[in-house]
Length: 262
Length: 283
Ligand SMILES: Nc1ncnc2c1ncn2[C@@H]1O[C@H](COP(=O)(O)OP(=O)(O)OP(=O)(O)O)[C@@H](O)[C@H]1O
Ligand SMILES: [Mg+2]
Image (cartoon, rainbow over all chains, first blue to last red; front, side, top):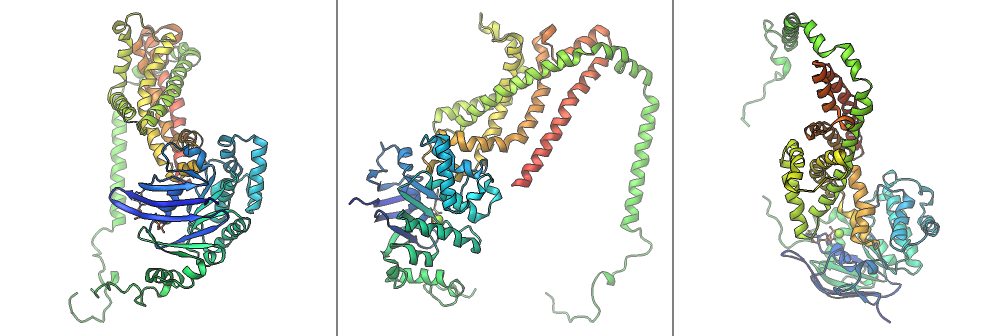
């Protein structure tokens, strides 16, 4: 069976800065893959290369059997198969919640008004914000906005969902609602590629975890292995910092070049 | 820090009582304000004495001359001013949007053309543009601006306003967060679809207050149409006032016309201010 996502020798540079230095991995249909790693390691860039919001410098990205890095590919058509959820929600503030979920169905998929509205309401109900159809995004809490953004992507019937730190901009008490929507999606068999710092989510939901640092994949495997029993020092250091942020400074984990006491 | 021993006495405002003989800041301020009022009153009295009130009234506020201006100042002159201004504004906005999109385009020649146009027509006095239009038939024999006098006036205002609108709209387009078009593109929208459905509507919202101000200055610039030398039913406010002032040898029509401008410009300016404040609050 072909992989849902196949990434080969992916490189991405911004000017002189090489952010991705040769990434290889695959996601199979129905799998959930979580990408973890320190800030600046290139996780967002990787995700944005998968739907070509960034043009890779080198390498091959194939999604659902279509090579997106082929210069002649119809990228708008290919993106319809991919849903993307951003850290900052990026809802359209000049439209109601319902319009947000309908606009691309109408303009891109050319669905009729009634069908688009039915699909929109269905998906909004699914993520638990069905009652907010007529509200404008700024009137919603962050957690509600993010769930609307998920519904907006789902309404396009994607084969693959990309999540870029979907809960990082949320107040702690709102994180759970969004994660439970994602958990449900995973259970329903959606193929998902998720950049996250939520280790318990990754442990529970992911089929595989990919740890990135400095633009390369350092370690990947089942969550119990990568998170539970990491093989690499860099992974261990990172996990220590994420799982126990208050003690990351004084246990000397970073150890290499201790700053002199000025 | 010096290593002087701490004194037991607390150092603070209470330690330095101001000299009782000096004026307190409050008293000084009161005296200064009193002097300013006195000066102002003196100037007003002198001006009032020196002014020839009767002559002024005869020339600027003669009731029967003012009556002659009615109702044409509204039904013809104001109406035409609004036609010219709205026409120039609508076409100027469309042209400005096109220029703004060209300026942000990835096609380099588009950027050049838009930049050259904007720099030229923002740098020229509006009057010069109307003179150019006036002499256009000389340069291009047989060429006529469609729409006659209305067409000429609107063309002039369109040329002026499109250059300014282009810059305002460009700023508006750039103020829409990048995440908006990325979200639209990630839903499969094409670049132009994302522009039309997502970016441009938000940019327009952002530029409504500055655009209202531009409408006001366009309304004032429409007075330059006077130099096109149109007649009768096509006159706008300034030409109307000027003509009536000549025939009656009296300046009252100018005053009437001035008040008519203010009737429109002051509420619009106020509206622009309100919109600006509301937007500042929403951000
Ligand atoms: N458009 C861009 N232009 C230039 N540099 C960029 C651009 N986007 C990202 N970078 C740089 O690429 C590097 C990786 O960024 P990226 O956003 O992929 O990291 P990340 O792993 O997602 O980090 P975070 O956890 O903070 O989101 C950073 O050094 C960043 O400054
Ligand atoms: Mg990121």
